[in-house]
Image (tube, rainbow, N blue to C red; front, side, top):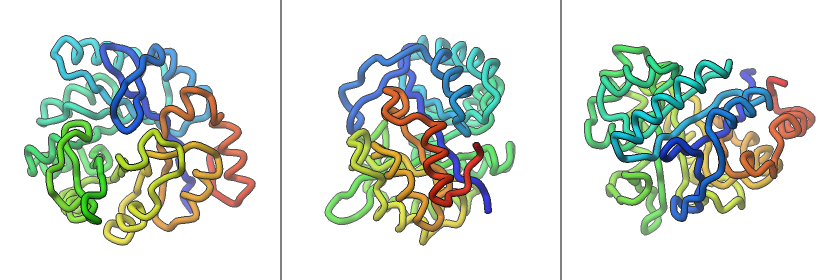
Length: 251
């Protein structure tokens, strides 16, 4: 059985890590290089970096941060946001990323996932989706969760995997930052539709939430930000807790 993964997520804006609730009200948390070093030593299985800066200056600042982080950590690094072209893939992979996460860029250019998978391999391509319930349907949102595309998120995931995405990150906007648990209903629906690793994001508040997540078939990883950044949940303790409950973990 493959070990489950625990993945901290760092949202970086203007060279600093920030974290909001339901995608709004962002607060400055820490230096990304320091935090990456901390998580590397704390037992994280992977790290995810989202560059949420829109500006060109921010982007070059992020490239510097990324190079520093990649030189300091020895766990897989996934990078996302602002990935719209194969050149963007190239840019972040050359800075030291192992995987590239595509979200709004694939909505704007539906061929992007297929082209990237062909060029770099599907193990490099992660489909990231921000999803929210709208009138009882799971809708795909773009632009950092601000814009309802009207697209059925589950159908979008099926298409992305068929095009070559090797993993899917499902971030539930409904549970993001609220810390009442992962959106298991939404995740179960996704697991019934795709057969690649699923990374659950949005809602983790306690160790029990991760334990509950991993009782559901098809869940490969739990991703969280604030519970790890604020040290409400210690990753080594979390992995021991899960291991004692029969969840396969790298400890």
